[in-house]
Length: 146
Ligand code: DQA
Image 1 (tube, helix red, strand yellow):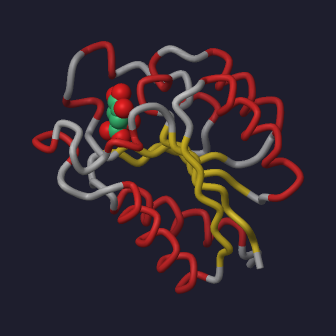
Image 2 (cartoon, rainbow, N blue to C red; image 1 turned 45 degrees about the horizontal axis):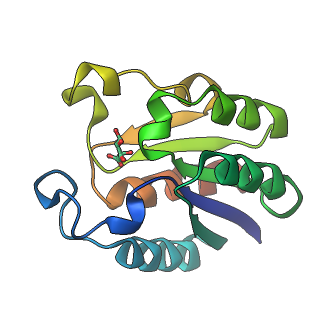
C-alpha cells in the first residue's frame, strides 16, 4: 500500500478559529479525519503533520523520502516566500501536490506567487478541506500503476 505524507505549514494549527470567513470552521483535526477516511477508501496509508517552522518542514520533506511515496503540501504563507521548501522538494524527488483551502489566485497579489508550484506535480486550491481529498484522489491514480 502506498503511503502519502500530508504536511501542513504555519498557522494551520489554528484552523477553525483562524479567519473563519476565509478558511471556514473546519479544524485541522477535521481535515486529518477527512484525509484518513479518503486514504482508507483509496488504499493509501496517511501520515499527517503540521509545523509552524520552515526548517522543520524542510526536515520533514527530507525524512519523507525514506517512508512515503508522495506528499500533499499546504505550506501556508511559506508557499509565497520559501526557496528552501522549493529546494527541499527538488532534492527528494517525491511527487508533491500543492494544496490550499482558499483560492490563492483570487486573493491578494502576493498570494498569486507560489514557490511550490514549479516543483509540484499540480496545485489544487479553493475547495476548503476538500482540496486535500482531491489531491489524494489525484495521487492515488498516479501511485497505483496501470
Ligand atoms: C493557505 C493560503 C496561504 O496564502 C495562507 O498564507 C495560509 C493558508 C490556504 O490553505 O488557503 O496560511 O495556504
